[in-house]
Length: 113
Picture 1: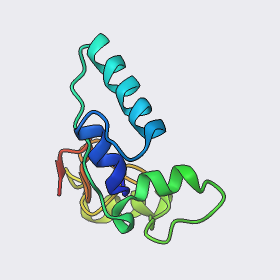
Picture 2: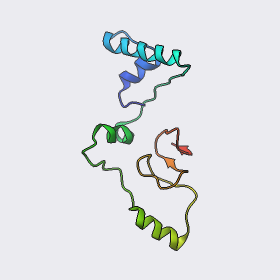
Picture 3: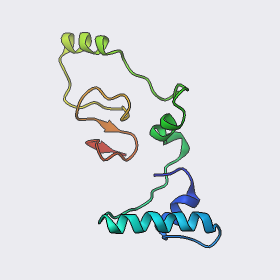
Picture 4: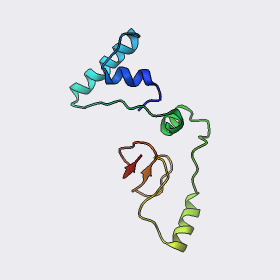
């Protein structure tokens, strides 16, 4: 997933004509995928929803969309009202349960938008 439409187009078309460097990189990635029997499909994701990548590229900054209760608070709430079976409205950076719903496509999430 990328918030760059040019990257998505080059990956899905296995290259392009405007940027030789990007074309060569796309071809290399596809050759590696073929050798490893992996099928790739690039998908566009709006910058606002690109939470994981933003977090990885900005390790020293707080991601404004990432809010999470402290584990001790979660445990107190679950002790009072019981533990849920699925964690809704979370990201792969702040889930509390093994089964969670992620706002963007995530292979580890039980459900994604």
